[in-house]
Length: 405
Image (cartoon, rainbow, N blue to C red; front, side, top):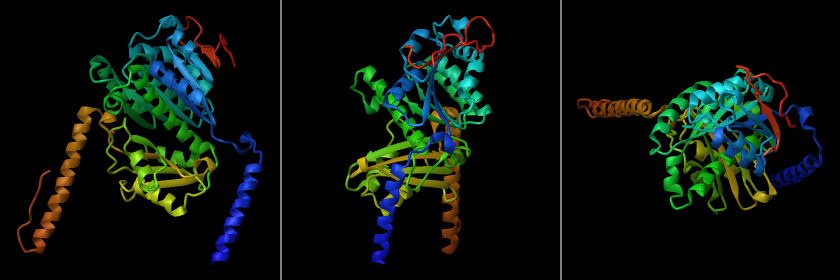
């Protein structure tokens, strides 16, 4: 048996060397096209960060009504929307203006997203362009056959007017995207209370950027136990509220610590009970064992319901020796940030009633066993390419103005 194991190890090492030496043409194998779209100021900031840290196999697109802000952003493609409506001066905090401006540029957006398989739409909810544009972009991408994931941030509680707009925008976005992930700016107060405001917001940008990068590269890079676009599609098509988790550790007890790091996401408030689907990808060094990888996948999905569809994969990279990283997507979770306070209260009340009924049933069974009466209980710059809506038409025409490829 020991000889068999050693032969397998030797063969695996030889196969790894062969795969590393092969120069594969991405187009030949039809790799999925991933596009990350940032709408409005906050979305553009995330795109700028993603462009600079680099995301293998994904294109970045920045959409804005503010020409000056768009000039400062680095992206593969930049689209100035609503030029004739806003004169490039922004949406003035009006989501309806952002929505109209984006609809005017739908021809250009359709062309840019035409063959995309997976589209991330990131924005800050509560402002004009991001709140209004994100649902429009999501609808366009979905109508063209892409899986659409919205990843947005919500305003501070003190921004009362923006909070109302954010809740309305979230509801609209939820109806257009396949899944939606929300990060709450209020939790920055607990996570980085003493950082200067500019650096604190950069933390939010970085978390969004790293999460999107992790998801994208999980699909586009080869793995020992592989995950692909079809797996992503299977999980995301289950719909509902989704959560994306990323954790990393060098701790000796890495099996549990990496799970703790991922589950204790600093800017996310979700209830994992009853989650219906999970996709888990683990990256480790040559020292990562099969038992450790399986243990991580098991620990991170143990909160899911028994019938949940779980898909997992693993990749070995030399630079991860002594450490491990996990990326996970869970669908069907509960979140007040997405359901809205009133809907979430009703969901919590319903869950409490179910829990109470379950408790009542168990007490009744116990009472019957003891021969007693049953008890009862009551009871989610010019870098890159430019596209412009180019003028006074009520609907954008792809006229080729200001295009830099």
